[in-house]
Image (cartoon, rainbow, N blue to C red; front, side, top):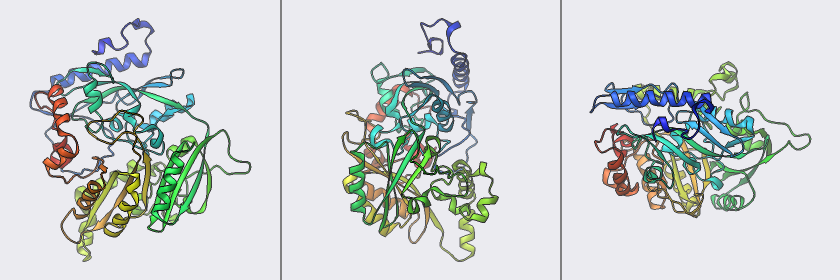
Length: 465
């Protein structure tokens, strides 16, 4: 579908102003892309990033202006759908849908994750046990391919191959400029109940039990091998009589409340962003959880994107490791990963992870694909429950560089799991393509990028692009 055909069949004068503006921005972007000389590397200009691959900045890239692609085009309250521009953050998307009593089926934890990023990468949250991953709620999307064509991909049209392979392609098959997604109704509040378990086996059984029930949200937190919490949320119209509505954007820190507040209430808005204020628990690395520091740290800067920029600066200049060397301490390796483990094997994963890596806390998020459909570049089994395990910290290097990340990759493979590609990747190329369906990827890549204008997936996530 060309930009001129978006909204075809509807007289131009009745199209929304937002849709007309979107069409104009897309037409401009397509022209700009096609004007870039062959052989020149191109990327879409992004204001934020949630990737954790910190290669050296490259100057031989043309960054296309995407300033007009950051919004919500339209929310259809009756159909429970939204047309959204690819660079729209979930913070802005939620702000547009909640006034209609609606939200995306899955809202990733961090405000500046973009819808396009969650669809071409992978997003997850505590509704994923019921609604899968963000790309599964996509009805159609307009994609600018590496060849410079603008196509609309749906599950069953001529570009169904692109629709299926887009998830986990990380922009190497094209850029989503407009995405139509499903929405679900919400209530004003979320009531949370935090259940404590001593063993990983008990916590795993609880995850299985709660995800089989009527819960709206389920996730978990592991503080140590003997302290596990499973948090169960449900939409409610109002808090229990006499209950307070918590606010974790101030002096209180959400993850600490799991230990002290068995039942809690948040507005649906604050629930969706409960992890963002302290970037789960990672704000502690900057002292932001120390009360004296927290009072002085402006509230508007208690955000995941602020902390992420600080980490990026440190990684580019290796400031922390320089200090460690001067003090005679070993350098540390960043171990920032999200992995999917079959639920039945979660206790095995946690046991080995605690012994060999030792990062805590650890986040648990149950998920299952929505139906019979599978996705070629992230080959999870349909009707099989998994748990996403997220861990984000650094560990002293005692042997080879990247020893802990490589250990995690090997452990995930042994347990028939999968590893998200937003962070460092240490697979050899042949092993990578075996794990991420190189045969299916190459077929789609050849169709939509026959000249090889955009680096392939391994080159991009393996550090070469």
